[in-house]
Image (cartoon, rainbow, N blue to C red; front, side, top):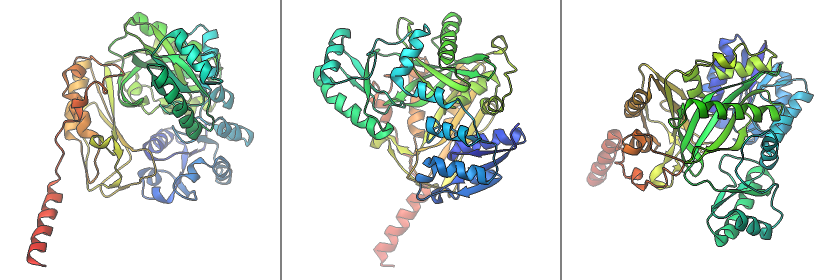
Length: 472
């Protein structure tokens, strides 16, 4: 087993990795920018090192991070999610410098990171894919011809990445021409290449993803699924495990397809194979994420398996000690992403000082968070500040527990998505499980909630008005 692991990330995922390392008896080293100097994960790590310059560059400089890892004598690097987690050049540099990358090989990251190549690979392995172009589009004329062939609507997708970047839907030729240029521009900015391809757009699907684990001895298992259909602009807001729409037969077939996709890439470590499921229960490969997912928590809750520990053990060369028949799904789990955003202003990020922080508790409640009272949320990073995770024996219990937990969760000083999430919990369609990827777009009334008025701020405003009136 490793003696020391460097966590090449920040925020709640850095804390999550540090916890897993501590339970395995592994020392930890963290990196941080000046903007993150007061972050929780910095305090939790055994060692912490300032990287820079600026708030972003230090987290993205692969040579500086690997040089630091060698200097402080670490055995392995865990990339978390985001930043460098799906950069094959980072994994490759670790491999060349003799440091274990806690994740798949650089070849597997590269093959699944190229969405066109990944489609072709899994198709050969017998995994169903959405009808689409065989490769990246050469020009506008090719895009128009293919869209006319398969019929509108179509989805334009970036070849070099995911997460909703460089992804646009076109419902006619005019929309295709307009969105093609936008998608290419977004892809260039996000992934360094402007290559895009086209897929048939599946109307009102469920977004279902399967968690897999693959060791270096060739063993691959799947740990059930997560329904990530509650999303806005392809960014996930709420995740549920298991899905309410899958039965045992469909779960087994999709799980088998996820394993086949992983085998096609010679994959090792933890990964997630994502699918779209249409209203006729047909499923299609979407993409594979070659890292730990934000929503890995709910799989842990329904299986009792610590996925980050498994990542570390697999990277250290240990074989999986669990087989497919050992995986038992117990009850349900749900995760709500708590973001410092203002939903009523187009979900605009809303950093600043946290003036009060009261998290929920009780049986079946878990918080993976990154903030505390008086913490100043930096403006430079992703706006997610906490993950609220609950589990229950059945859907009714997990729903009511999340409803209660959101009511208990209080964050003041910055606007968050908590009131928006509470509104979703009060929606009858969500309560009954009647949702798909278009749920948020079809319900603008979800933004019709009362703004929280902090009594402390109100008293301060009144005092200031009185002082001004009296000329103090």
